Length: 538
Image (cartoon, rainbow, N blue to C red; front, top):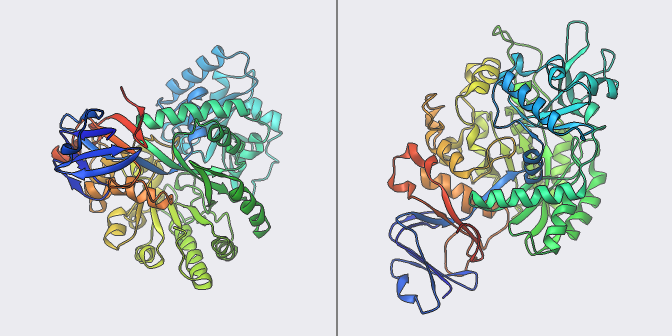
């Protein structure tokens, strides 16, 4: 026997097992139970859990690691709050990087600016000599300075693209924030990220994610998107060199400027990406935007700041009729389909598409899923289980915080605001649950997300619980982030602690099942193993 984990408890991916031990041999679980210690021999490495918890590795079902790694290496605004501090951070970065032709990075927070839309005139005070292009935390908007607007030729006469919007002054001139497809008006001129930068970003991200107990993920966009070049070659280089330690399923990007003619190329890409720890069996379709910039697709229009209905019900990036046809064709071609849907109309359009595919092709084991699920109409809750569509949760967002209070609830209105992130209703309906972070949109820390999933608050004491009736119990939340996401990724020999399965394991410094539920987020990862090999820890 290679490793024996003792003196703690086990969460096996579905159930809590107090007092269990786990034995590992040749990268797989040899045994798990209360009497495993008897298997110890002279060559066994004994890991004392110290009253902590052993569990399967976390699997992030919706994440952008290369983007996250790049932001960590560029002008990273994600840890910074407040207009003045953000501008000071940008100014310091620009001063420290005189060689950069463009100032790139992101992570700024919409609540720091009136209407969630910062101004180019403000950004000019931090950097005026070079163009600046900084995406916000959710990557659905970009803040640009006057130099960038001038270089791109964006002015009052520039029309909004069909899939985006330019923030404008009363005279029609752009004020510095570009939403959704409008980001490309400037982003197309951003110098492409080099292959070497992507490889370095992926290596950095992988090490960071392992430190959080993440052993696998679904990369939610493999392809050219916005100003980001396809990260697939970076993954391939690491896979061929044996440096890709995580298990990765890539979601190939569905170009919304094309239709069914792209499916043959997607099949070719999928067939070429077949490595022991890298595959690309999924296709990502972004059906709408986000609620904060009023591009999430809603069944009824948004309210304005005065509580009156507007004429804007958001966007459907793919025509709903075409979406049903495309999802049916992708299903027939053997692809899992991964849909971004924030608004209740977008969620319904995605469910309608999966229903059409099921009627045309019959039931499959492709494990389709819808990510984000911010607003779900109550009539659609039961359809997830009926259609075997997994609810891919980003639980960390289900809290009261400035963005929710200032930029979301007033414009959704009271009824729809109560339909947000209905994880409890989905679980009670029998829907399959998976979990992810959408990093770098938000923190990739799974324990922080589990804290919110169980408590509907972050534990910092600033706000009360957000729709607490939608909370999950700890076992259900951990299962979503382990066995649920592993199943979603077709990584069927991971995500659970059972004899014969791969030893992708995480050690926590405490047992959250024995602590108050509002202290879950205080747990920390002390060691991460993939096939019994330690990839993080002492």
